Length: 210
Length: 314
Image (tube, rainbow over all chains, first blue to last red):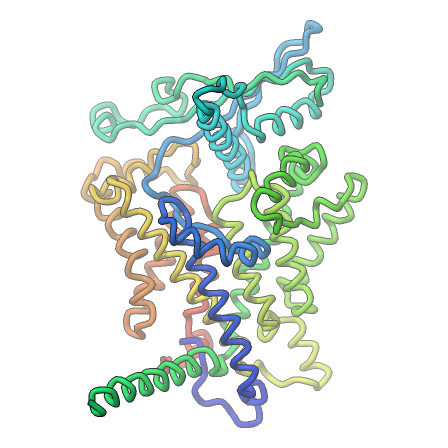
C-alpha cells in the first residue's frame, strides 16, 4: 500500500485533520463514489430503479464529465464501423472519396481518433433510423433521418473541399471472419470484400446548405 | 427482552465504531507522494501527447467547421441535462492557434509539476473541454486520463513529489523532501477505487457475451483488422487453446482485480498481470495510449517503499 507507517512528527501537520474537515471530506467521498457506482449501473441494460438513482447524481457527474460506462469490448468484440463519403463537383472535376478511418494516417492515436469518428457517426445514424419507425399508428412515419453527426461531417467535408456540390455519406461495417473459416482458409486480406457489409446511404447533403 | 434488544444495539455500535475506524485509517492516513508523482508525470505526458496529436488536425477537430458542428455539440449537451461545457466552444477560429499553444504549455507545466495546484485544475479543464468539444473522437483513453487528472486536481496533491514545484521550494530552503500527507492518500485511494470500478464493470459487462464464455473473444479481438496492430500476432489464432487461455485470463483478471488487489500478497502478481494485459492490448490493438493510462492508474497501488528500493511494509 502506498503509505508510510513511520511518519516523523514534524511532517504530520497535514495528517492532523480536524474532525469537521474529516466529516466534510467524508461526505464528499461518499457522494462522489456513490455517483460513480450509480452512473455505471445506469448504463443499459439497467433497471428503472438503477436509472432513477443515477438521475439523482446526473447533474454532478455530467457537469464533471465523470459518468462513463467502462464496458470495454462488451458484450463481445464486434464488427468495425466504417464511414465513406463521396463529394461530387458537377463541374467536370472527378468525385472525391473519403474513408473514415484512412489507413494511412499516422501516428496511431490520430488513426484511432478517426476510427472513433466513424464509430460515433455509425451509432448515431443507426439510432436515428431506429426512431424513424417510432410514430403513432395514426400518423405517417418520420422523414428519413440521417442522424445529426452525418450532417455535421458533411458540413466539414464541404468546407475542406471548396466547390463541391454534394456530399453523400455512406456507412458499412468491417466484419469479423469466422474462426472456423480462419482455420480452413487462413486470415483474409484486410480488403477482402466478403468481410464488408454492403454500403448503406445515410444521407445526401447539398453543399449550398452549409 | 432487554437482552434481546441490547445485543443488536451493541453489535450496531461496534459495527459503527469499526467502520469509522476503518474509514479513518483508509482515507485519512498520510501517504508518501512518490507514486502519485509518477501518476502525474504519466498522465500529464499522455495528455500532452494527445493534445499534440489533436493539433495535427486542429481546425478539423476544434474549429467551428470541424467534424463536430458546435451547434450539434450544444444540442447534445442540452439534451444531457444542460450540464456540459467546453472552453473550446468559446474560442473563435482566429484565436484557435494561440489557445491551443496555451493548452500545450499548461499541460507541459502540469507534467513537470510547475504551478501544480493551478495547472492540475487547468489540465483537467482542458481534458474535459476537449472531450466535450469533440465527443465523436473519444475513446476509453480520454475518459481514463481525465479521471486521473480530476483526482490530482481536486485533492491539490499533484505536485507533492517529482515536481519542479518541490525542487524550487527545496532550492529556496522552503521545503524538505517529499512528505506524506492525507491529501495524497485521498488522491491515491480515489484512483485505486476508481480502477476497481473500471475493471469490475468491464468484467461484469463481458459476462453478457458468449465469446467471453466460449473462450473465443481474444481471437475476435485479433481479427479486428481495422485496429492496425503494432505487431502481427494473428498467428496465435492457429492455437485455439492459447486464444481460450488469453480470453479466460483477461476476464478472470477484470472480475478478480477489485477484490484481490487489496490483498498484500496478491497485489504484485495482479499488478504484473495488469502491465502484461495493457501492453498486450497496446501491441495487438495498437491502443498504446489507453494501455499506458491504465498502467498509470495502477501505479497508485505500488508502494512508495518499493519505488524507493526499500523492502515493502505493505
